[in-house]
Amino acid sequence: MRNPFARALTLTILTAVMLTGAAGSALACGGLVTPNGTINLLKTTTLAAYHEGIEHYVTSFEFAGEGQEVGSIIPLPGVPTDVIKGGDWTLQRLIIETQPQPEEGLFRAAGAAVASDSAEVLLEKKIDALDITVLKGGAVEVGNWAREHGYFLPPDAPEMLAFYADRSPIFLAARFNAERAANRGVQTGQGTPIHVVIPTPNPWVPLRILALGRKAAEVVQADVYLLTDRRPETLPQAESSKGFDPNQRGLIQEVSEPASATLLADLRSDRGMKWLPENGMWLTYIRINETAANLKHDLAIDASGYGRPNPVAAGYPTASGAAPWPIVWTVMAALVAVAFLMVVTDPAVRRQATRVFRR
Amino acid sequence: MKLRAAATAVALVLLIGAAAASRGAAARANDGTVRITIHYSKFEPAGLAVEPGETVRFVIVNTDPIDHEFILGDEEVQRVHEDGTEAHHAPRPGEVSVPAGETVVTTYTFPEASGELIFGCHLPGHYDFGMRGTVTVA
Image 1 (tube, rainbow over the protein chains, first blue to last red):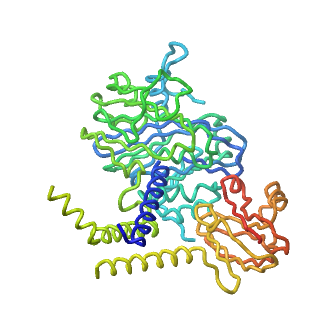
Image 2 (cartoon, each protein chain N blue to C red):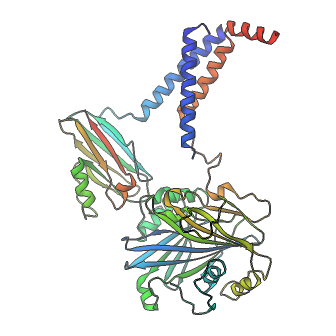
Image 3 (cartoon, chains in turn orange, brown):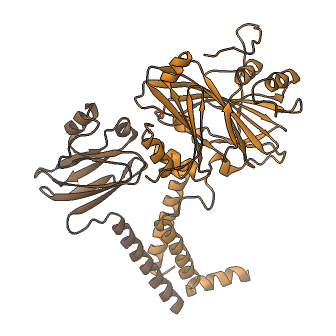
């Protein structure tokens, strides 16, 4: 390349491309909303069961503190057909089935207490001390609704809501009214389970929302149970367990086995759980023990047997949903193409190439 | 040879276009107005340069569904607001609340001395979240 301009241009482009490539490599890589921060979510326990195209989402919130009200926002994969009070022992029975117990105890069933542009309201319901509202709307609409209804949204809420609304514009807002709880004799630390019935072809469990309002280094802990017709594949894939090691970080698969007949019988005997088959279900227990900074995705589930959990359901970017290419990158690509043209049209280069190919 | 000339011309046009685009992103109006957008609890742009004694009209656009504020001043001003307990206060030059989805304007005259000032939001958790930017006076 005898042309000094062309040589300089090509060198510049190659340097820029290498630098851009290096930068690219480096780049690759039920939120609680409280009015005053005096109530802290301790840990969530969730069952996401999937049978005959319907996700049964059962969750319970245990909390502690002295605030007047506390609320949660849970993104949902679809419009629920019903929200009912969760069974009294479903979540506890799953814990007993899967987690080491301090001593062999009897399973006690009933009474086993445990510690502007606004969105469209699809459903409202009161379940014990919880006020449940199912919303449909984009991030701004849902955020506006929450703000207008007295929810305090932390600074990461706008981005978090957008993360979910881009996939599914359905949210469930649940606010625990401390006064009603006091009237009902609900004790601090006690949970109220809810059961959401959601027809959906792509079941997923919202995980990233658990990091809402938390500092990057704060550890999010949650127990997620899956009951599916077949052994599921999940995305992200859970890590193998090191035997309930409390220091193991990440999404840890503690249990993956056929659900026992006794477990299914116990669960079926709980409120709202008759839909559960008597046998043939697979039980998976995934323990979440991850810093808020690293909890960036949800848990997509494929129990179809094809082993292809949907990346979109897990919140991974898609080709259409990916961030647009910065204009600089577009220009870089165009410049590379131009440089290539200049090189191949150089008579000296063509002569050299001809000699090489003749050999 | 014609092809090479055409390719060179295309390259020059692209370079000029890229330069114009990058300049446009940081452009400010000739009348001393600076537009700052709040998106996902971040200021965009998060860095500005002004001249000593310059008067700037800030137009702050909050695209978020949550309230924010724009507090401009030195570190002491930021500390006072971070430790303060006022949820809202009367607007002062360079200190305004920016309600969700709204646009507010504040005009501020920078000191004659060179230095660096900070603008930030001091609603609970916002400053720690990274909701801040800098103004270089030079």
